[in-house]
Image (cartoon, rainbow, N blue to C red; front, side, top):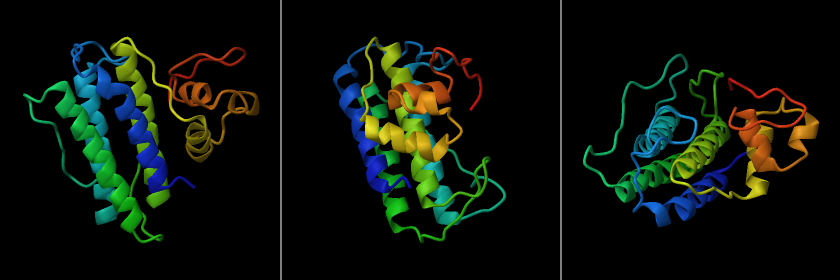
Length: 187
């Protein structure tokens, strides 16, 4: 099971990689996305805050109806701060949620560990998208990647999952090709 501590680790990985490059041009396209780096960081914060809202309200058939966004004039450092805040709020919510809490997610009802895992996927993959757009690479903890892969993508072929866990997580989300397996287009 993925925990709040795992989410904290993913957010720390994001911050450690992206904070040093907040002086670069965050209007660059974020990896394979149509969004720029700034809006991708904003998306991370919004997703994480939305997941926290789900755990607090516990709707079983829909998302809680709210949208969060960074201030339009926020600098790259400030929009990264927004994403970090979303991660910390979700981690705090996961820590305090009842173990039996369940809320809507399109993949099925999700509990605290599920939302922590979903948050890790958002943080790790979109941080890499931003990093690529800024000309750097993310190097997250492999043991974290392996746990997230097992939690969210258990159908990953054993020969892919048994290799580098970060590469496997990127493959599972359509971010990279792996020899002998078709590149995924959906996740």
